[in-house]
Length: 315
Ligand code: TUI
Image (tube, rainbow, N blue to C red; front, side, top):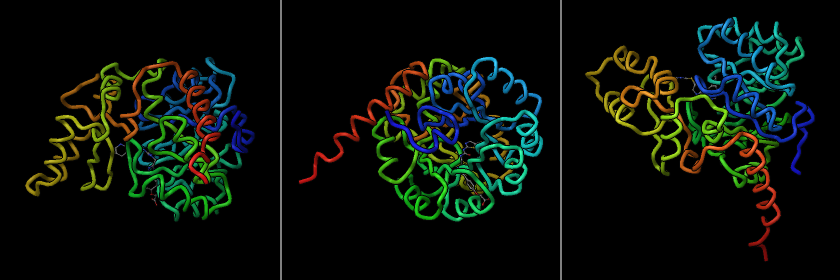
C-alpha cells in the first residue's frame, strides 16, 4: 500500500489528485475519484459562484470523502469563487494559470488546504512563503495551459526549492509515472487525461474518442502568440489556428475570436470542426474507458510492482 504524508494531511487513501479540467471535471467525476480514495477536484474554470455552489452541493450528496475545487485564476469570476470556497468550507483548493498569493491568507484563515499548481521554481518559492500547504509541479507534457519546463526537470528543482510537499503532474497516466514521480522526490501525482476517459466523466463521447485514439505525437501547443499556450489534440481546427498564429496578416483579435468557446464546443458538443480538445501527451497512453476506482487501483498496483523491480538494472 503506497501512502505518503500528503494522504494524512488531506484525509485521502492514495496520493493522487484528479486534474481540475475545465468543462470536464464536474461534481460527478470529482466524487467518483474521491470515493476511489484519491482527491477528486471540481473545476471552477470560467463559471460563476452560483454554478460552483451547485456543483459543491452535488459532490457532497455523492461522497462523504474530501474533495477539492480548482480555481483557474484567469477566470473573470476568480474573486467570487475564491470567496465561495470559504463560505462553503471546501477542504482543498488547487489553483492554476496564475499566481494565487493574494487569496492565500483568507483561505488559510478559513482552514482550507491550499495547493497551487506551479510551472516554475520562482512561483513555488513564493507560494510557500505566502503559506501554501503543498504545490503541484506541472510539466509541459500536461494538457491545457502549459509552462515551458518538462515534468522531469521541473519536479526535482521544485523539490529542492521548497520544504512543503510536492506533487508531480504532466505526462503521468500509469503506475510507471507514479513510481517515477516518487523517484524525483514528489509525494504524489495529479492526473488529468486518464481521468477524462473515466466512466463517470460526463465529457462528450467524441472527446473521449479523440483521447482514446491519440498516438504519441498527436498533441500540439497553440496560443503562444497571445501568451496563453495550451496543449490540445491535433485536429483540423488546431492546425488551422496554428497556421493563423504564424500569419502576421491575421490579427490578435481574430485569433482571440477563434479560440473563444472552443473548449466548450469540444467538451459539451463534441464539435470536431470548431472544438479544442485539450489533452496531455499521455493521451497516447490512455487506451480504455474504465471506472475511476479501477483507474486508481490499477495505477497504484502497477506503481508498487515497478518500485519493487526498480533495482533490476543495478549490479
Ligand atoms: O491551469 C492549468 N491548466 C489549464 S487552465 C485552462 S483554461 C484556459 N483556457 C484557455 C487559455 C488559458 C487557460 C486549461 N488548462 N494548469 C496549471 C498551470 N498553471 N499550468 C501552468 C500554470 C502557470 C503558468 C504561469 C501558473 C502560474 C503562472 O504564472 C504565474 C505568475 O507569475 O503570474
